[in-house]
Image 1 (cartoon, rainbow, N blue to C red):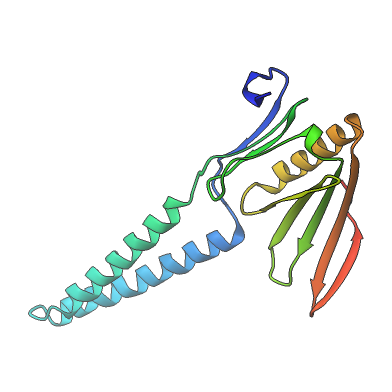
Image 2 (spheres, one colour):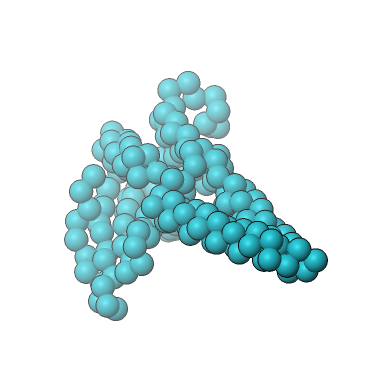
Length: 186
């Protein structure tokens, strides 16, 4: 069955911008650099009106800022969707092809949260296991917001219990090359 025919599916759509502290910090640094170089270009232009140094400094600064803003706005608001229903689980993300698995295709779902030394990077690995095969799907906090990830994990756990699938959730922390494994609270 195709999930599009299912009227009882639950969807979580995430197309919000990534308003992280890193993004704010990088934008602040870019703004400070623009102010410094623009002021320097303006002062040089006033001191040496026949010289093109001030013009080139201002032109290069504006060009760099426009390129930065283009790259910054290019990745904002990308459509990502999670769907779950009586038929299966589906992820739609721009970085990978559509991932869809039916409940009858697996007997065990193992979710592993991998925390790395690099903050705030977390990767969630979903391992769907059958007697003869295994399918993996990875997503991170760069794909969905933290609130939506918590909703997704709770929905998956609820449906696994409802569908009598074995559900395991654990957390792996990599600290100085050593992996610590704990149960993941969902």
